[in-house]
Image (cartoon, rainbow, N blue to C red; front, top):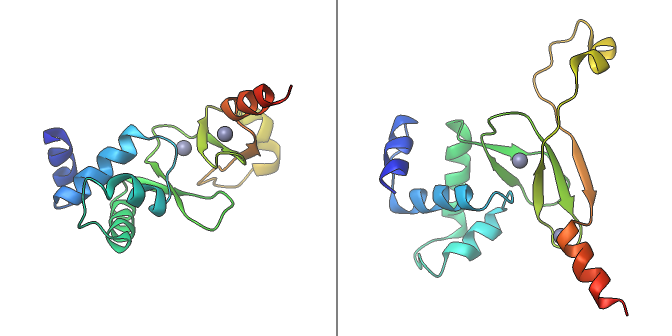
Length: 142
Ligand SMILES: [Zn+2]
Ligand SMILES: [Zn+2]
């Protein structure tokens, strides 16, 4: 917790207890949670937490470059701690978790279409059923 304290201060964010707990949760749960996921995970520990606080905290983290809002289908925004390197996402339609996928497209494969362009972001999304859900599904079949 002390490290998160220092880290948030360095990023220009006042490290309130709730902000620290939310940041810690994001760190420990790299499943790209929604505001609802974060709220329900922390409400037992922090009874004073509100969804508005979670929402505002995520916006604050986003403004200060701590997280990215990932562009993946769905009604709710999902969050990623600011990625160290670009990666793709895989959304499981069964458990609704979003996993990171390590992917790197060699520049020579895309350079033809993007020649002369300045690429700022790269978003690749996969959807389907994750391996844990596949196993659960298969074990039900007799
Ligand atoms: Zn799944
Ligand atoms: Zn991610």
